[in-house]
Image (cartoon, rainbow, N blue to C red; front, side):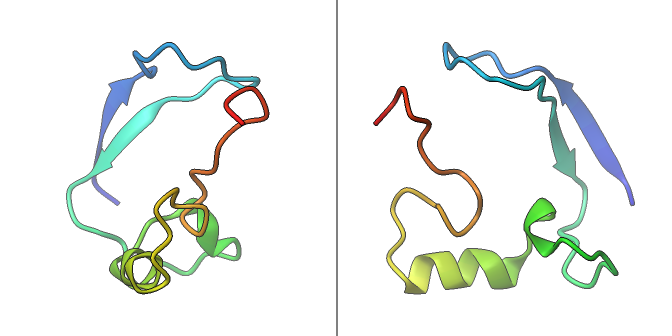
Length: 68
């Protein structure tokens, strides 16, 4: 899969694990992976919009305990 590494996040959020941002050249809709929540797809984005999930918890972007 082709992707571009953007480095560590530049926001002020406190992460418990180290993260790196990546950008896919094409959205990976048909990737053979066991844990589908690790890879964004158009289907998951559409379901998030249809559920009116403004915090994107379905996509895996929920608030941390500190933010709550």
